[in-house]
Amino acid sequence: MIRSGSDELGWRETAILLYPNSIRGTVCQMPHVLALMQQAWSGNYTVHGALERADCVVGFAFGRLTGEAEVPPGISNQALAAFACRNFPHLPKILQSEIAAAYARDFPRDPAPTQIVTEHRRKGRYLDTRETAEQAWLMMQAHNWRTALVLAHGHHMPRAVAVCQKLGMSTAALPGLEHIPFCPGSEQFWTRNCWLWFPREVGAILHYWRLGWL
Image (cartoon, rainbow, N blue to C red; front, side):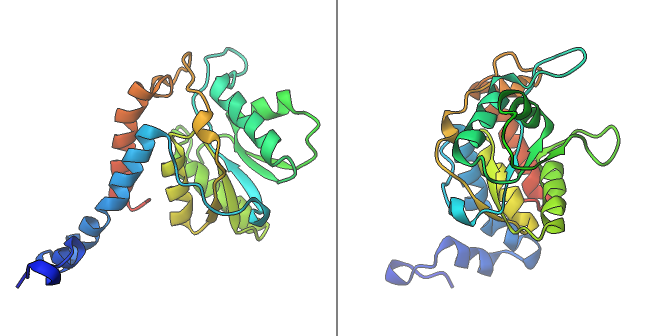
């Protein structure tokens, strides 16, 4: 029986009583999913961890411009590269190719080693956040690294961090990424502004949640 007053059950306890095991976990995860959506809209992700404890940087690209021979990284990825150089130039980096291209062009004297995630391991598949994180995690494990400083657009950070943590990484996130701009000329239309980003990101969060990636 669900009681009222000072003994009223919380919604999690109510879910435990009312829902079968098959969907109980899904119901109890809803606040986490809704929080990710709210942060994806605002760009105000959760700052956590400490720079001095990070073993490496894991960078997720955001948009790109259409090019013929080489794909220009675009202003979002240029800003991410600049943020990395300004805040943690000493750390080894595992970067998606668009950020890596901007970093190599704009900061060629950085001595820290960089590993690059360029494409999906299954030929022809889109290189999404989960695949990028999986490849980065394999590279980290090869070096016995456990803690990644996550580098992503502020509106992308909530899902990127959640995916990394689900894989088993310990993560850290510095403030300031909320100032990374969108990329108005991006061929990936959803990275051009917040209004185009948010509907697609809601779909991505729900999709990842359904697959157990968050």
